[in-house]
Image 1 (cartoon, rainbow, N blue to C red):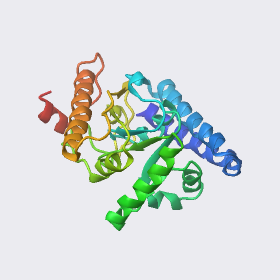
Image 2: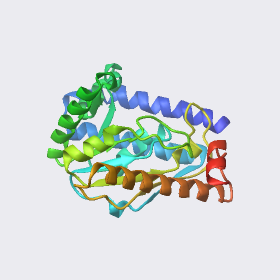
Image 3: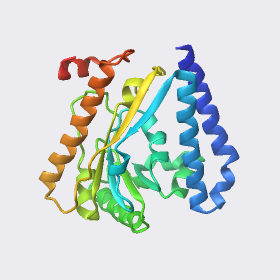
Length: 253
């Protein structure tokens, strides 16, 4: 817990410094600002390893197509929101619109060209999200979405939302599923940080043009099967992190 508190202090200090000292990037080219965002992600991942003993392993990166692609990632932790950025070339992340109004953070998110969604707007929000995503894809960027819309405890029953299916149908892009186990080492709603290895696994892309139900089944099966395997792998490691009870029950651990 001491290392966890030290890391939390370091994380927020580094993040504040990047926002304040890098505020001039709001007036610079977007590519410069994106380079700063990637540097922030790499710095926080490095600090997590040095302070808390939590390493990063990336698998299957060769499965990520070049150019515009829909990236659908499991979402278990706040870690996912910054650590995935350096693993991608020029990501445009789907995020809730309310974050845009946070001083500096929201301004930078707009500068980065992120895709904002006002969930309360219903179908109109999906149409606007698809329109903005098409513009970013036209620039050759990766469109990143967390299909469940919010952080889910590792091993919890999947709860995929329609946004990812709508984007897939509207964009006509291949979809690269991403599995991970970050929630075991950086649990949601907790200051705990556990030593071990966070694994991010890029899975084989799903080709464009599949019927909605076929795509939905393939996507959920790919992400959940691989993420469950990563939980089991962590549970069998020499120094396993705490495994949530929901995962123990569902996976028979």
